[in-house]
Image (cartoon, rainbow, N blue to C red; front, side, top):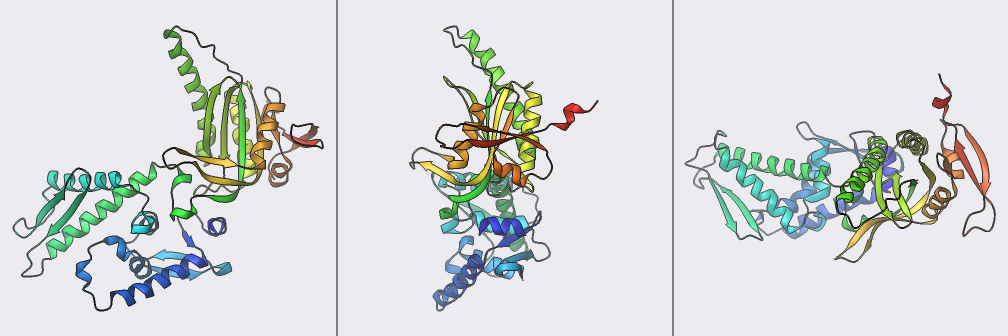
Amino acid sequence: DVATAEGLANKGELVISPSVYSYLHKMSDLREEESSGFDDEDDDSFGDDIIDVLLSKSDFSILDGGYYLLTPHNGISTDYLACLFMGSNKNMDPMNSSTQTLVEEMVVSHFKTEPAIGINGDDTNLITNGDDNEMIVEIRGNEDEPNDSFQDFQDKAEILRRDIINLLESHRHEASRRVIENLAAELRRVVIIFIKIQYEPALSNDVSDDEAILEQLQKIFTDISDCIVPRNGQVRQFISDDKGTVCIASFGLRGSVTLDAAATAVDAAQDIQRRLNSKCSIGITLGKVFCGETGSRGRYEYSLLGPPVNLSARLMAKGSLGTISCDQEIRNNDVRHKFSSGKHRLKGYTDLVPYFVPIDETSNTG
């Protein structure tokens, strides 16, 4: 569903699946039943109103397959609606308590240092309660009569809170941004790139040598990252150990789908070869892999697992310096590059495995 929704959404659009659309309306109906007979003012949690906000502040246009395009009303951004999915509901909150406390502290700090906001100070008070682990922010006005300035104050505080959360989210890895907790792991068609760099630093007991080694590793990482990240890819891992220096990258993870991912990955690989002066071998594959967190709650990492990952590593290991070896799926899906072909005998495969080497036409131009 996620992959289909991403395929239907253009840049800046928010598309939801039929199941999410059904869930929104189901939860809205349940909330109306549960709230009958209760005073809404007893609940000041913005998260409890997330469903109503999504339904009241956006229009739904049906697309192919029962998917829906959300069009926000005037004054509401698509980013704001997406933020509601990503962090406002109690059961969908990606932020831990320390992050929530940080956000509230920043809101309080802003209004303490920026008092000139057009609010009548006699009718409005900013009150903070709580300890180091939890902070509750309340903005109270004169209860005897309506106060437009008080409402304006509340609105500004909520907008600031949303902006801070959006800013924090922008610094999280795309693949780790969760729409719903149990959707963090999935099977997904992804392009996998393995890069083996010809650099095996000799470690010594002289600490002064460490700085030069770190600088060289940082330069290699930066060169690779500069070729991957601007193309909407991700650097999954960068390791230098007894087996050499290896980097793993990918294209097509959730939140960063790229048109023509196969061709984009080949472009990135060719740029990497040029940046590293052909002192690396690269394997590229395309296929369905497990994308998600592995490990325990105390220590885990985002992983890519599956046969395409293994094949990419095998093609990298078999290739010589300066070569890029792609699998059949990359060849079938890349419509921009020309390839030469061959066959390798690879570990774990009974039959010879075909591989395809993209022709770098820029090297033939004068």
